[in-house]
Amino acid sequence: MNSPKDPIFRFSDLTLYRPSREEPLFRDLSLEVNIGDRLLLIGPSGSGKTTLLRLIMGLEQPDAGEKEFWIPARRPSAAGDPPRQLFSVCFQEDRLLPGLSALDNVNYVLPRAERKRGLALTTLRRLGLSDVEINQPIDLYSGGMKRRVALARALVVPASLYLLDEPFSGLDPQLRDRTLDLILETAEQNSAALIISGHVPDLAERLNARVLNLISTN
Image (cartoon, rainbow, N blue to C red):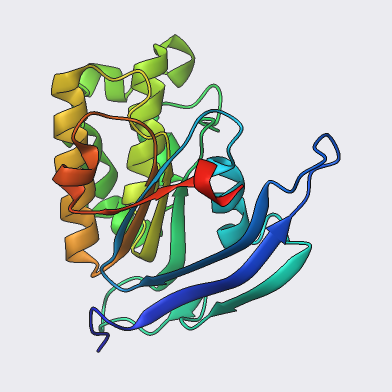
């Protein structure tokens, strides 16, 4: 059983260059995230919030430094539970499947047994979507509605680490509060760490999170 102090990953002295920049985007960046951690990434546009998440996912590699991960991509789970991934992601772009309903988009990432349990439907309802909306093609959705579907798709997957890039984009304060409650509940149920990017008033306090200001790493 994992304890709150068990590490998930550690980055040591990462440096990353961009062809369009003379100075590195990251210079000697070190970061460790443990089970149960809450980390909020802030910084102006172009400071590297999304890039840091991509480094964690392995979609980009640093020019120098070391990355270490301690939990395998599919760790053992309790009997009858679906396999637990290392991380589940809500990208900055919604990346939904056009022509499909919200329900089908979320069910797409779930094994058949979880689909039968109605996890996708329950999660979408928790995020304020009506049953009529849930069964509509996402092509008819507003930006804020699509954002909630993308977030639901990330949260239904059991994971050790949730990477959420601007998850509250397009949401009004009431929906934002509802969404944050579900994010925190999901992380607690999975004994998972959270890394969230974005600027929302009082978010660090609500998350009880460490804050990494990426402008100070450049």
